[in-house]
Image: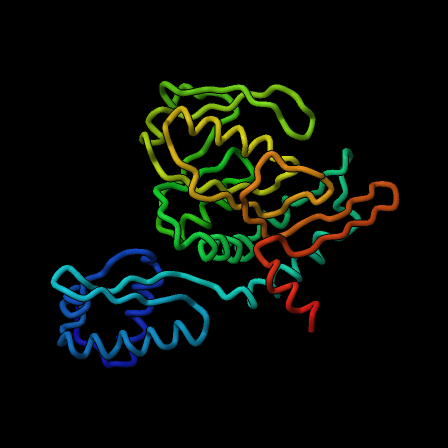
Length: 281
């Protein structure tokens, strides 16, 4: 690559880091790429690191030694995330979203790349400190969220199917009880999709009682896998007890009344401390 002016190099280096999250990049990679001395590259990275932290874009970790380098960890501040989720809750409260059975129409929200991008960053921030091998979800609505999250964690995605596909090869299938309607349902996962003893982050779009997520946990036991975290975009607050205890939710439906068509949505448990501080003020 031809030698660039420092301003141009900073822009290109920033882009290089942003599209390679959680990837250790040796300083020699940048030095060779821009035909520059390592000392100049170190100064550039110091500038980028400062901007990332000041603007709440994430962290730029530096690892010393012969095998060292830099690693970009995407993170978004909870204050910024809270503002975004609060606005999203107002969208969820639109009366026309109510469907028969007290469900909510969210497909339009799930179809907006900008929203998925922000939600993915929030989940990546919430679980960035966890040792995770893969992001798992169940088809179909959770798939975009899982991929958005996996993008910022630089991890593969594993999709649990409602039924076994021929193209998936041999699979492990289990029956589980749906938390909402108490029906027996089936889910399956290809044996090739997940290695044994993998560390898994489960992401789902909506949790009423938690039957589906609990089913995924049972399925993971067949692979001797470990659940390192559970992230839920929207949870139902009308349920007294969930089947899943330890989870992170970004939004919560505290009340849905089909008769009056009134919906009350609020930030999820991920923002519990921030909301408490605001209420005290």
